[in-house]
Structure formats: C-alpha cells, structure tokens
Image (cartoon, rainbow, N blue to C red; front, side):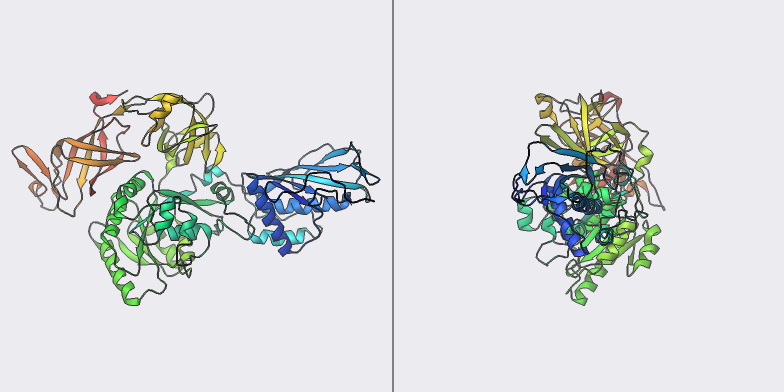
Length: 635
C-alpha cells in the first residue's frame, strides 16, 4: 500500500495547528514535553488549537486504524485537561483512503469528548452508525482544544504525573481535589491590592518580577525586565510609570507563577486569574523623586489594602523612603517593610539601615512597632495586629532568601477594603487610562469604586466631566476584567469599558474622568477639612495654590477661604496652631482647618467623603471632602 498520500498541507512551525502520527503510552517526561507543545499551540491560537491525529509532518496520511487514533486522542485530551483546557470537538475521518488511493468522499463522524464539558458534565453527541471502530479500518482524527475560564484542574507538574498513570489505559482522572471558582469573585472579593513603594534602586520592580515569574534574579536586572514596559525603563532600570501586576495563589497557598514546567511563554493575566483562588494586585510605583507626582497619584487612586516599603539593606534609608512612608500612613494604609539585597550585605551596613528604619517607624507621625518576621509562625502572629505592627522581612531576589515567607504573608493578608459593601450604591467607575482599539473604538481602563454595571446595547452611561463640566451620554458596549470578556462588573474590580462615541466625543476623553449611570454632576469648588502635616516648615494662607489629589483626580487648586478648627488638646491652645494677623489666617504644621478649594483648570467630579491630599513639591497635608457648594455644582 502506498504511504505517501497527502490529505492536508504540510505542518507549519508556528500557528495553532499540530500534526501527530500517533501518541503512544508515555512516561512523565514525554507527557511534559507534549504539554509544553500543546501550550505553545494554544498560545499561538489565542487560547485555541487544533490537532490532526494520524497525519505525518508533511501532511500525508499515516494509515493508522481506529484503536490507535482513539488512544492517541484520549492521551491528548488528558494533556489538555492538565492545561486547564477542554476538547470542544472530536472528529474521526474514515473511507478517505481506499486501496492506497485518496478518494473524493469520506466519512466524518463526531464523537463525545472523554471528560465532557468545562464543568465535567458528559457531552451528548449522536454517534454515526457508519463509523467502524474495529482494527484495520484506516482512520485519522481531529481535535479542537480550547482553554476554559474556570479553574477545573490543577495545572501544576503533578497533574502531568497523574497523566502518566492515566496514559496506561485509565479513562478517568482523579478530580476529587478540583475546585470551581468564579473569576469575578477571585478578582474582587478575594483580591487584595498592594502598593510597592520605596527609594530608587531599592529593588521594587526586581522583587515583583521575581514573585510573578518565580525565577531568581541574576543580579543584573533579569527579573525586572520581565515586567517593565518602556525601553527607557529597561535601559535605565528605573520605573517611571505606575503599573499593576497580578500574582495568583491556589487555595493551598501555592503561588500560580507566570512560568512553569510546561509553559513555552509566560502566562497572561487572564490565565493566572483562571487558575487562582486568591489574587494579589501588585502596584509597581516609581521611586525617583522626579516621579513623585506619579507615585502619589498611584497611592491616591490605587485603593491599596497594604503597602510594601522597599528598603535597600546596603545603605541607610533616604528622605524618599520617609516620604513614601508618610504618604502611605497619610492614607491609612498598613505598611510592611521589606529589606532587599540582603545577600552579600555587610552586617554593620544592614544594622545601620535597620536602626534608621526602626526610628522612622517609631516616630510619632508613623507610630508603628517594628516586628521582624523569622518564620511562618511570626506571619500568623502579626496578621491581626497590622494596625499597630510593621512586619519586617529580609529578602534577596538572587538567592531567594525570604521570598517564600513574603509569599506566605501576601497569601495570608486579609482584605481590608470591603468593596462588596458598596455594591448597592450608585455606579461609579474611575477612569485611569484611555485607549483607542482598532475595530473596537475608545476603551477606558479604571477601577469600579461603587455599584455594579451590566454592559450591552441598552447600557446607557454618562462619561465626564469634560472641560465645560458636562457629561457625555453613551453606551457601554462591552467590558473586560483581566483580559476576560464579561457582561457584569462590580465594586472592587479593575476593568476596561468600551464605549460607542463619535470622533468629537473621543477627543474629550481624558484621565481623571468618571463613568456614572445616573445623577452626573461636576463642581469647581469643594469644602474640605484638612490637616497640615508636621515636617519642614510651611505656611498656608488664603490664595495658597497646591496640587490636589482626590482618588483619580489630580489638578491644581487654590484656597478661597480658611476657617480654623479649634482642636485644643492637652492644654495646647488654638494660637499654637494658627495666627490671625490683619484678618489673614495662617496655617502651620500640625494645624487643622476647614478650607474651600477651587480648581484652577476645569470642573471635576468629587463628592463628600472622598479623601484628598495636597502638595507643593512635597506632601503638605491630607484631608477629607465635607461638602460641595450647591452654587458651584454643574449638573
């Protein structure tokens, strides 16, 4: 019988299609290699791939019989399940070759996948009675494989070991430990947000890269290049933008890393979310003083549950470390101190650094008690005392020292912000970035601060305010969470929304806008109760102009009026905090006052209860918005 019978074009090295002559009973090493190959094909196909079984690499028919092709298909389906994927279509093709010649007609018979659908339920397929399952009948097969959106199987290497047993003839796999998780819950109720701050060259991006990829650094910036976006950041090694990265954990506390033994490429965020029980959003913020405005905005609008204060153990903490520490404490964010580059660090240098940090933490402005973490028992001990204690870790991204303990800490951290309590409030989406996606239109990424939204053709929303204070009425067409398409977003989630806007409206989109479902309004003025931070001498009086941060809003504003708050404490009189000379009130460090601010450029959306921060170079004070003057509100 002639064997060179072409049935499909030759196999391509790249793309979502793979040819297999036959997959025999294999050991763990062989299955791991096949899993890596399948993962690559799915990456090439955007989550889907197709396997041709009983076909040579040159596209010729392998002339196998039905039992050989069926066994190969079963092993490939086992491998797909280990990669959190399912077989959505299984076809057996017969009567294609007769007496060694290719004929024009053939029999295509559909079969049910062995392991059912994404939830494990059997798939009912009407079998073709013409399909012959006896040995000797020339057959080839086709499998369509697709990644699912729920965590059904453990994708760690031990699953491949289980496949080695399954490939010996068993058609069932042990799924007793499988758990089905809602991605929406994983990315909201079981997601904590951690701001990573510290002085330049403290190793912030390197630590995040090590946690995300589970690969140790080489001491020359290997880990940080995995997460940096811009060329100038990679070349200089310094972060200039605020970026977020997703770290996932399984229910056992094992991290879902960006790479594993069967990955050809690093996992994307949607894959990490699908495989995770709990997620940690790490916000990489700039450390250089030149980018302090970006860092303040990241902390202000990031809704961080906790903050990692990164300190280079080889040198004393700088004034920027103090600035970042004050910034986090001003927003009431519990801090965790991480000493980096501990490998090869002289003992005296580390002791000097540790004492300086301890002094900072114990200062009256911070009021934290340092607590060194030595083992997992210490992690459990400190967990419910984070409002008074500041855990301290010693880490090295080169040797891996302290990384496991830090991962344990991140997994154990309780969610501090209860966004689920704000679901019944009016929908409020804070816009952080604007994109124009070809074929989709304008896309806005941001954070759902309150309420919930069901997107679709009937979902009317208001986007604004524009420069004149008005809002644009439009339709929220679609939404993505961690690159996963969804029709419902809720409070506590980071999401992207696509809008139906014309060309003129697109030009008006900017950062700092909000998306509302009802009652849109903007204002140029607002009243706030502020506290001037202690530190370098500064005076604040009427017409004082500062840069104001209110969640995602950042704009210059000036003080129109000031009213002193009488906070006489411990016998300290009001005159200690302020002086009134010729009816001009002057605020000094430690003063509290009610101030009416006016935005310098355009109206913004702010409401009572929002926390604010103002600065003129360095952070000068914090406060909370108390009211919006009705006369200045723009409806």
